Image (cartoon, rainbow, N blue to C red; front, side):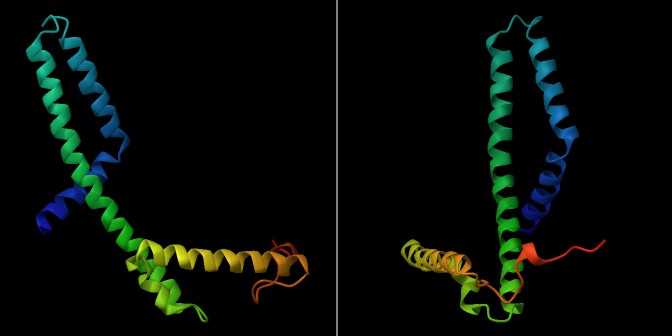
Amino acid sequence: MKYFSTIAKWISNKAAQPLAGFTAFLIILVWGLSGIPLHFNNTWQLVISTLAAIISITMLFIIQNSQARHTIAIQLKLDEIIRATKGAHNEMMDIEKLTDEDLTRIQKKYGLLVEKTKEDLKKGKIDTNTPDISKVIIEK
């Protein structure tokens, strides 16, 4: 499993480079041009179809692996921000484990909070202990 992760990281890093896209373009161009002398026969079509299927399926798993790692890293960073922020609710650190119904319920509560905050702002109140951004002077 560790080997797959290491290889997947390496491939995803290489596949994200502009050279990878250019190489893929060149391969398709050479394949297309090779069809002329081969008279676009069935073998010629089968080769590219098979290669495309193999590469697509392999890249699917590599992309999934990469996305999973990135999601975990982002989640951990957000958890650290919650943990380090005074007044934040630490119980929010594992909120992704809740059911869809629970998430919807919490989302509605935050929606009500946003509406109340908008009303307070119209009344001239501030929504945090931080001054309004329009009142902050940026010095150069």
